[in-house]
Amino acid sequence: MFGTTVKEPALTREELLTWLREEDPARLSQLWQWADRVRQEFVGGEVHLRGLIEISNHCVRLCAYCGLRAPNTELVRYRMSGDEILACARQAAALGYGTVVLQAGEDPGLTRDFVREIVRRIKETTGLAITLSLGERDEEELWAWRQAGADRYLLRFETSQAELYQRYHPPKPGSTVDRLYLLKRLREMGYEVGSGVMIGLPGQTYAGLANDLWLFRELDLDMIGVGPFIVHPRTPLADPAFARILPDGEQVPASELMTYKVIALSRILCPRANIPSTTALATLNRKNGRELGLVRGANVVMPNLTPPQYRIRYEIYPNKACLRETPDECHACLQMRVESLGRVVGRGPGTSPNYRYRMAKD
Ligand code: SAM
Ligand code: SF4
Image (cartoon, rainbow, N blue to C red):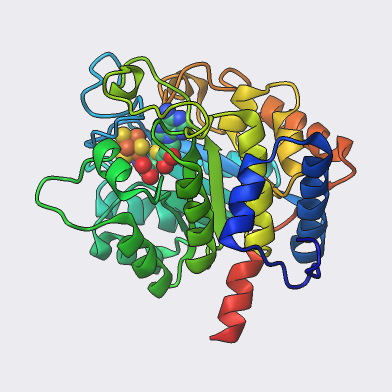
């Protein structure tokens, strides 16, 4: 299994499954070292900081896992104004970030023209790279935003287990478009493309998760975001009668350890991708979850720039890490954490080496 060189990482599906089930600390330590070596070789020692702006918590969808789902009437909804979003982007630039990520529920109130205008204004005033994560939008909108200057799009496919996906992510009425199709279209439009999954969704099998990892490689993703599933009490998945938890030994745990395994295996399979150490991981281990993600394959962190009065309402799941810190505090904390690992904060847009590689090939 270690016979491959760092330049040509190779794992079979069977090996993926073996690693996902591995519990021996000595073997796991070899996996962490392997992923860290590949990370150093292909994307280097820089850790890129992406300023996250959660621009709206309105959502029309019914995702069974997410607290922003439309039927959650207890959630107080907000949508940031263009000026508020621009102020956050300026703050990102002032803190030295090269990128902002505009994320939201699937919100038709974020119209094509509103988003196009905000992309244009951010580009014009800050020059930052812009990542959008606004759900399943019309191709015409995605193209308009790309033309206005949006650089990247994040859309997790959540799970490759079709029956789980359909149960937990019901389609929009009248729509047959799926996320895999949109990922293909985003790539054709010239976006840097990011996707990923939740780890430990009820009903997720080891074979299913190995298949997810395999799909990351087949999709040739530029960015890969993975994080543990965390139950939100006001969602269908909080109801054991709805959630399809498998018997012991078959159900993938939504654990910190499993998240590190998936980060490490993603790095080995997709060596040039940008991979964040996510907030969901930091939520499971506030003390050093982010750092452990960074030494087991990740090379990105996402400080939150959302104004605090909105941040607490972007409640995908409860007790999220870093809910109350100001952007300055978030920045100082993350910088200190990165430097404590002997790594450096990246400068500039931090374009995915995978994107640069495939652009050079095409
Ligand atoms: N609405 C957009 C979308 O669905 O792509 C972007 C925002 S959505 C909140 C971002 C991601 O949050 C989803 O892709 C999903 O993987 C993750 N998420 C939602 N509910 C979660 C939960 N309960 N635990 C962990 N992650 C969750
Ligand atoms: Fe809406 Fe995204 Fe949450 Fe689904 S995951 S309910 S689309 S915000």
